[in-house]
Image 1: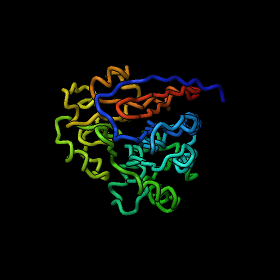
Image 2 (image 1 turned 30 degrees about the horizontal axis):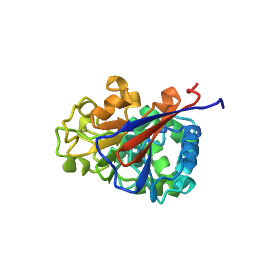
Image 3 (image 1 turned 90 degrees about the horizontal axis):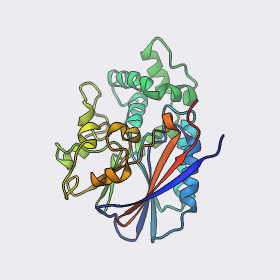
Length: 284
């Protein structure tokens, strides 16, 4: 493994988290346990500047990369490692696909659709790594049943603990974002297991992109909140510059790890965010 390069950027935010708290928010990892390990090293080395330290994982720890299991294992002990009193793990769209596939409480028809979407979006790497199964089975129904029968209890428990969003002061943490055309509270209350059939990207907090990323809110932000999110690698042609994102009342921490070898973390203290980017080896 080659050397990793770490960069820092400090940004003034239009909203603040609650006082005497510092929050370490980590964006999409996508199976790059090596990069998550480097971020946690940086977090652990950061001198405490508040009474309480919290960790927020913004979702999409798994899929695409070579070591989703390692990423999950690191995440399980990350709070203790960096001295956080609370760890909040949010549900990304990849965790939704994974849970819909593995959870026997989800109807088989819904699970089959999720399985197919999951396999086409990086889940094949997890099926091979975590379950030792061939994702190329011709019978999707048999593969779904095999996955549900062999799902490790600790993985199912982790998926069951994931949250839709988290708030501190005037800052909202959510995987993909919000839809400015929808009332905030009802949008955030949408169930994680909304069936994929008929679900539009803009219609869910784990999938939304364009209406959120393109929006230019006024001084009230998104119903009063500044949003910290991931989901869209390097903002994909919207507002790649962090300062420009902040002007739009949001901060994107998806560095595109599976494509670029970069991951991001923001340390929030009051109304200031320090963004730490770790650049490692891009995937082969």
